[in-house]
Image (tube, rainbow, N blue to C red; front, side, top):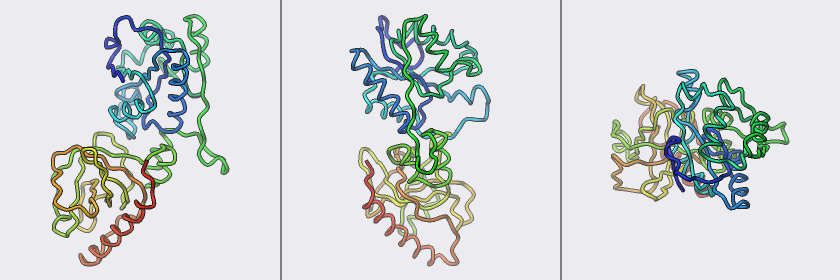
Length: 317
């Protein structure tokens, strides 16, 4: 899969393509439906499927300081899109100047002049151009002028029996913030993942017999609510069952919020300086301060046992 950053990276002589545009943070099941349709249309037409996305998140430029928690960094989104069959990902640097493009100018500059769109596939709530004035209806109207068609894909709903709500990145962020990693997994179609480099912490876990990888997460990462979770620690292609702690370590009156993963039944691991990923499969309990260190150690042993069982029951794929 080709990856381009900026319009100038698009190869000369690029032909017609099927395009879909969006932030696509998380590449959740609703996104997968839209991208999957774009790929299917591209295969039918014998042309490439291209995803157009943005960096930074548009809200950070339009309303500085409002950058939402990120469900997946761009490299992870690209991996997920490649798995769906996408041929190229175009990351557009989202600047103040770019945000002021009128919808028609955006269409000409991106879809017509550079990507030569033949089909554009979007969700029903897609908005684009200055002040988000462009809609799927205006996108289709412009397509009649510039020789492309628009397909609108409805998003799946979660819990339709109870009224339901469309799959969205906002929904996943809320579930993650609440610690409902099982619910987030339902919408994403896979476990929520946090990435970063392993750094040295206080090393209390090692002293207590539960050495943890202290993950320095990427900026703006969506981190689950404070608590203990069952999950997987991914290191250099290997997925290890793990008990994960998120919080400030109240037992020792900590102030800094951290993500720490204990690789179950593994000894002698040296992970310092490595880039790792942590998948959250299930919530075990909230953070708490115990009366004694022995009580904490007893609870940690129970946590690991529970995590081992929950991971065995889960299908992480």
